[in-house]
Length: 302
Image 1: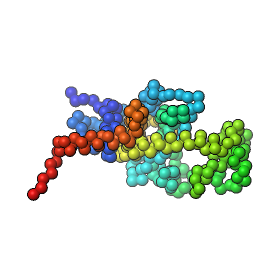
Image 2: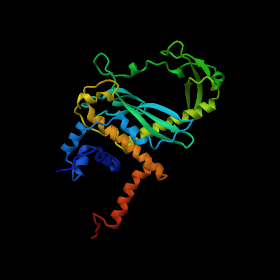
Image 3: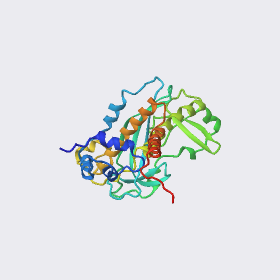
Image 4: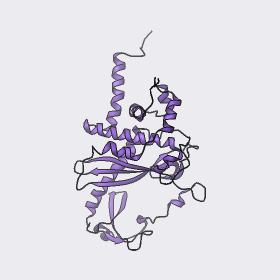
């Protein structure tokens, strides 16, 4: 009887593959699993965000000064017309509206040891407006841009209590002006009214870039954006998105597996005092060493 494919098999493929993360590539390099078998696995398997927590909770090192950080990212699907979860939405990376799948991630940061862990995620199925896709960025500008307002810089160095448009009337925050570089200024808000130091605010905000590191590593090393599956999965798994979609679940299962692979890469990187990039590149280094010793293709000169 042929071996049954498991989540571990698919994750192992994502872990060692360097560039191509498609099902066809997996099938072409596997002696056990055909493309149809892999596709059936993707249709029937259920990967939930809880599985991320189950795999990471034993690794977590908490701290009284720890942070929970949430952020969204868009999986670029600009050349995908038939994946049903794809919507036009604004991408901070592309600086424009693109076709993609929205994902919200949550990490825990321990500043004492400068480490962070992915602990949860959700796929955001952007609702359609008037039964059509959003074709421009005008619908995304519903929030007031803080940097378009003018205040005395001295006020912002100590923090200025303000109200933000769209917030409840009784909800106030404290605004700081942070100079990131000579060419860039950020405005940061906090609900901590005891904070009065721009320098401390700048230092604290530096931890938010950890989640950007997660997004960059995941996309570059585990194939977050590479899935090309189209067909809908059964509706019973719809609870994993913000609202029940009509399909596109094959695009989500590889995402869940990719996140599990990143969790494993991060664990191995910490254990080996390395980086996730070094771990991936080591696979190519070992291949080159093996080929130099015993080349599959032997060079010859006339």
